[in-house]
Length: 272
Image (cartoon, rainbow, N blue to C red; front, side, top):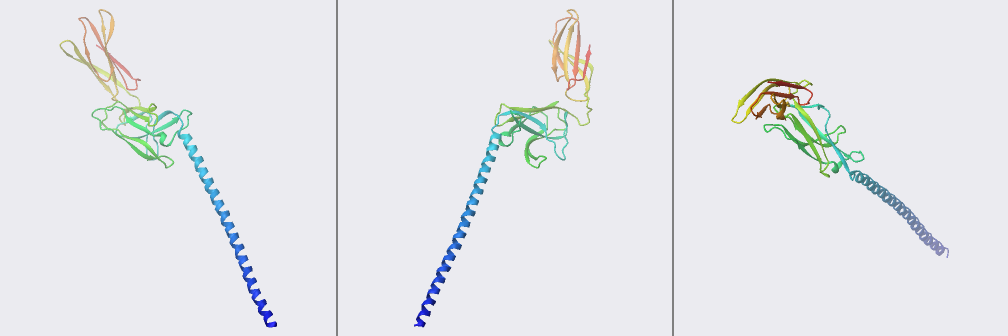
């Protein structure tokens, strides 16, 4: 009898041990699953926060880009190993220009809405001056679009203008115009008129005048003064040509030439 009781207790102890072990495993697994759920929820919350942040950032950029364009300023791009000139384009030099696009509220617009179409103003027919759109790094190391221009040493154009027109709003544009001179020119432009010469034509007289100048942008004007009627007449108005075609009735006249420098600060005249 005692042997049967011991066998019964032994079996029950084994069964209870197995039950307790199963309960313990279930509790542990439930706790682990609970941790997984908590971590999963935390990760989902972080992902939502990240997405909300991305949406917020996009909204800020979108608002910034949707601003109305007010003006465009074309400037020389100054960065390391580059020398810019504030008053003139010098022959034989390379230049890099940038376009700054501003909104109507004065803030700077960047990104796609700041894209511009570059254009180089008219230059001499015999010019070898070249220009192209290029990419450069600004002072912060970011890639920016610019306009690279190499002025030919023999460039005859007295003034060069570079235009930048908004791609988003083509009615908005900016430009930079500067006189062209040799690198060794003095800051003060000078011009001096010399002697006149003429050629007789069938119904007119072609009159020319010699001159000296330290720049190519000299402008000329030719006038005639009728001594009999005491009145002035314009033979040829301000232009780049130092020749004029004069037609006049019989009488006594003065021929008067005027010249001024490209910056219109230096003036000279001569009368015959």
